[in-house]
Image (cartoon, rainbow over all chains, first blue to last red; front, side, top):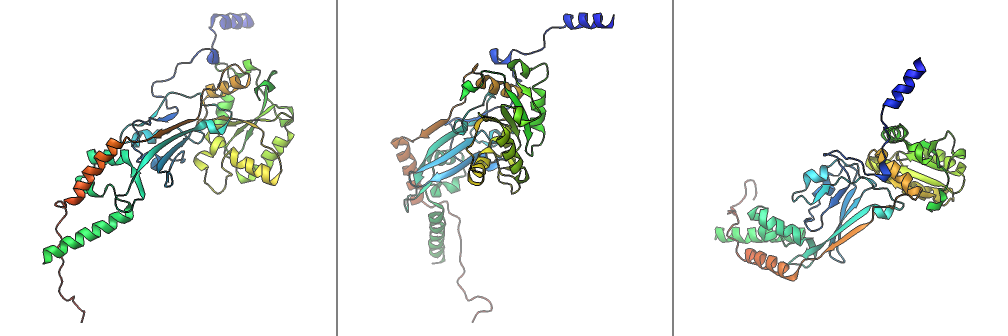
Length: 171
Length: 194
């Protein structure tokens, strides 16, 4: 009798196996999938690269061609979502995409190149134009005059102006 | 590359220093709900019986000779499924001293020290990889699904007008320095100096 009951039980239950590769599966609402940078919104501040625990997002400044290169390597990403939390403009978002399987490592990269501005004093490349624009709108006002200067010129100019000004006051 | 798998794929599961997250997903994918076995995938206890190695973990230095042995024992054509962030690119441990840091770093060692060509590799990212991602990989191997993930590269150049606008505003700012704080330098003889 025990076996008959087992047979009846198993026949009365529906099929549990998902038909996944042939049909899409439901994904939970707060699922954290592939992080994607929206190149139209990104300002190139590299806040995401700073907070990324496994350094899946990296950035470097290409001083020869004048680009800031942001690179997302999905193979190393742990989908923690800290990049999304730290982005000031909401350019990087975790999508619900999880079908990231690929046969080559190259396919796992997303690269965003942003044009760099030139220092008005010495002509070296400094920070992306987008970043300057963002700081002009939302940054502190006192910083405005040094936005288009490279770090070396910035410190020099600041010292010069302050010294000059101080001298004037003294006289 | 893909027409290797006209028959069922047998997999040898190799843990190379993983946190067991991916290993549990590998076991989970054989349960009735995802049911990996409907693609003919089966776990075998020896790499000599297997078609592919399911590699998890960032490959610790102590595991390198063992992984090499397993890959040597694997019959041709050799296939490696790199499961999880650690196996794909080193994950959170990519720059730690005790691990090799992902399968690509391992292939460099394989080439230099053992003189072997790297086997066909399938990257399955995720921390841990979803069971559905493993099924997707099997689907790619069995030629049921096409690979969706592609490299994306965007180059953003600003328009000249925008540039000029920013530069004029900032040049004007440089010209006026009314916002600078007042600093008064006292130019008397210092205390203690002659």
